[in-house]
Length: 178
Image 1 (cartoon, rainbow, N blue to C red):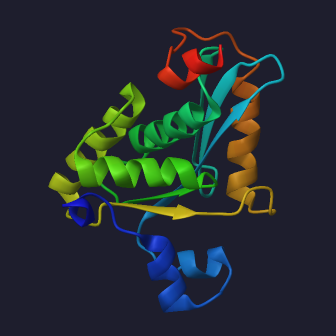
Image 2: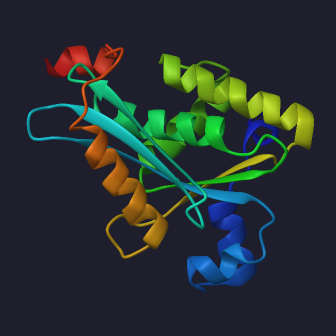
């Protein structure tokens, strides 16, 4: 059931293109690439950012103090899916292995533990209905390794931590750390 929900491009790209740089492997992919990131400021405010390759779409969201960086990462994925063109496949590139693993686990089990994760699962299912089983793919990129899109998403997430949240999110992980 999970393979119907998300494909695993990291392994596919590596198998097909070896250890070529990400931008060379991306040339062979027909999906819109979106980098995502989450961040927490020194005073505990969590933010999320997403950056569409080519700079044609950016976004950020502030989650507040009762959320975790993981919540920010998943919120970034949600924002990327919502902002991506509805008629194109999407390749989500995240530097958070935990967020990618959570989406995959939620896809396998059919259960999502947070509101953002539930929204991500709904968006993936909607895209798959319209575009087929490989409509959304996930890949991992190494953080702070001069990958342009990842660095821009990181900047957006950090900027989001300076903003006042419209609707602060209270999450289970955020309550544990409070």
